[in-house]
Image 1 (cartoon, helix red, strand yellow):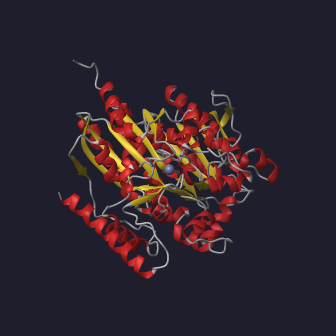
Image 2 (cartoon, rainbow over the protein chains, first blue to last red):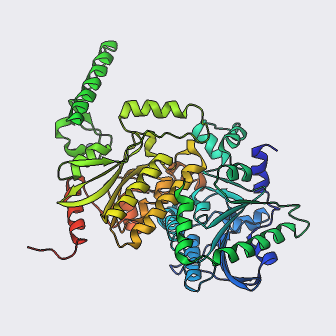
Image 3 (spheres, each protein chain N blue to C red):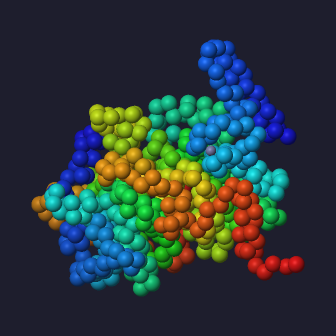
Length: 258
Length: 289
Ligand SMILES: [Zn+2]
């Protein structure tokens, strides 16, 4: 499969979204809303749930399964309000000693006037910086598209894992081609995707991610949910055994190496 | 010593180029760039000598400053440049990237798009990083991220205040995902630095965009903006094409950002050094005498 085909697969609206993963992996999910600064973003959701018997905090991007639902959630493009909501929930997780699990599925943060006016850069930067302060286990899962700073806002963790057909990149292959190849009609997006090395396997080989989770047939069985559930359970147990200082030290070094 | 010689040499080469150009087009009357300057904001032509610190004497527009000009402006006197490097990674084997970097190194005499340094401002020792957009538009790749991270770690070890002057087109696209990882690396270092209750001043200069505006630029304990500087996450063109409507004229200026709550104060270049001096002094504890 060519790399751009992987991109198309990662963007497929039929893929499970964050709610599908939450409903199939966790129990008793309670969604929590609001940035406490005057808004709530539908493109980023979060809440608390049980993973087996372990309480956890979940945050992540929400994509719809069709055009209508995607219009409601802005195609998973988060606004400052969404990142501030997630930040609030992650800080709360830290306070109550709950591990944090983030699901990444976004083309990038929303580029708009209001985004800029409300400080999208600041909101993402704060999510990144604060992620180095939480003394609870933190795991990121890229389930579809991991695009740019909007993805990285939830991408600083003890472990970053990717589904087999997800992609993760500095920007879309279309954007990359437009900027670097002056490509106006999208004719060089395939070439860009090849050069960008954005598939799970590429990124694993480059040491950007820690594990690839096989998908099986995403829509017809529980294979992927079991895989993710088992992985999270196991890793949270392992990470919970580390003392807080070691946990923070390891997380720092994980990103210091780049 | 070596630096002032280099400056003279640079000027000489500008003059030579100019002369050659004039010889080629005898009919067009060109403005000798080293004697006169045209302001890109008000279009007035003034003598170069009247441009103090690259500020237009007519309208006050702040023209870009390179890293060495900035360090000459703010430091009390001598300073030491830190963490210069010969590294120039090309993780995607991006065609022509290595050659482009070599060419820019020759042309700008910089090793990358940031210069890190240590010196005194108002007699207070501090670590200063200045980005320089002559080098790949100040974009952040592995070398920029590494140098700034080293500077932050160094300031933390020495318990010194940190000032970063930003100017950047964003993440260095040619290095792909490795550029994105720099945002995490630098902010990780900042998290540690701040946990030690040390002062970080972020100083936004024109233009600051993309990855830098979503990592260390907005994270200062104090965020200063330079007048007329553009500061934002997404570029004007990207936003205009998304929303398909005209953007406000002052959109993404430092003034706009200050009104929106993301910049503490806007400081004219003539007050840059003295303002930094006061802020540093107020973070040293009680003033004596
Ligand atoms: Zn002017």
